[in-house]
Image (cartoon, each protein chain N blue to C red):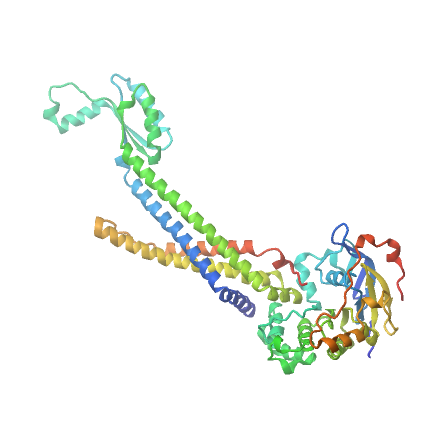
Length: 293
Length: 288
């Protein structure tokens, strides 16, 4: 068994050694692709977490028109709760608000009738849903467009930033991933061509398909794995640089801890699996069919 | 010259009305039936395109018959699942026409590599490689690279590699095709010796002098059909035009004029288009 493993490994590493430049190109491109995908994915998660941590800033405040019956107001609250992207709704009757205000500002409220309208505060699950929720509420006769208040511009900015990061990550990372896939595929196909004599001998003497295919699959796997490892170190380095910059310029980010284990595992596993898939695609046809002529 | 020791019992190889069509108009074999006993030595003769290679490829399961049945030790090869082809090939030694040696590996490494490829341990390789090299009388060149060997020596290495699985059947495609008469005779002597030890030998060849000298069974093919089957011990002369084979004299005369440049000494005729061959032509009697 050990002998067999040693033979398969030696076959795989002979190929890696022979195709040095192709291996180098495949590994570095794979690393770049994973770095872009992983790095921008990480940035996306961080921005999203930031956005999630600031929901109160993006609460939508809604004021009911005067003389809206309490039942109608409660119905609107119930309808709002059912809207997509809404997390919770807090109804604030004008009498309750007035009582609170009277306690807080007794001098200001003394001797005047309650001027406050009934209102509600809406907290969202998804910031991107804010424009739609606001639009729907503005249509309601009990409310009216001018009575819906939220930080539309800030929300839009954050949503755009998230979208851009996501788009950039997908576009750049996807492109690099395809390129590295093609390179790994080509490297394996080149190996197949370079080792056609050996494969022919294997088929001549009755080597099984696994003996022919495993070194090739291993080669693609190792290329992906190395790509993942390089991407991990590059990511670690980038993280340290960005954190240092944030601390020195914005005085934030000092508590951020680099997720070493999960990112190492993520990059290496993603690279290995990707390399394996590319080499699986490359190892087919005559390579395995056993042509000996 | 020793006679083959054909054994009784079920045939080692049997072809039953085997047809191979590569396309509607291109036939590899047309209704071939033959039987090869264990321990037999059989020459397959015929010009290029006669079906020799197709016949060999059916045995190694590189091609599958269009109809009919090919059996090895009673097992229908047409029914063999693809995953079992490697194990089928371990039951035979295959010597390709071009030797198929790995140029960057020494003689012993060529044999060792093949053994490692069929899951033999390093210990087995260490024990068996010298024995095999001795068996084919090439041990003295074990550390040479193929480029440092003569054609005959390279052929010995190819035969050595074919013996790694101790196969009961050895298939050689034109084993003397690139060799001078001396080396051809040596290779044939080696194959005869293996045959005497019980190995069934099937040799595809154009080489009339060698075939005539060995007086083994000769199956002659033309346009995918058997046109002659001469028993071992009988004198064989080509059933088809002898001019289409290379004669010993022609070989000698070419070497005399071209020195070492004798790699292509066969004046191979172009095969007739299959479609033009009439049934009557095909059925023209196999000569016993």
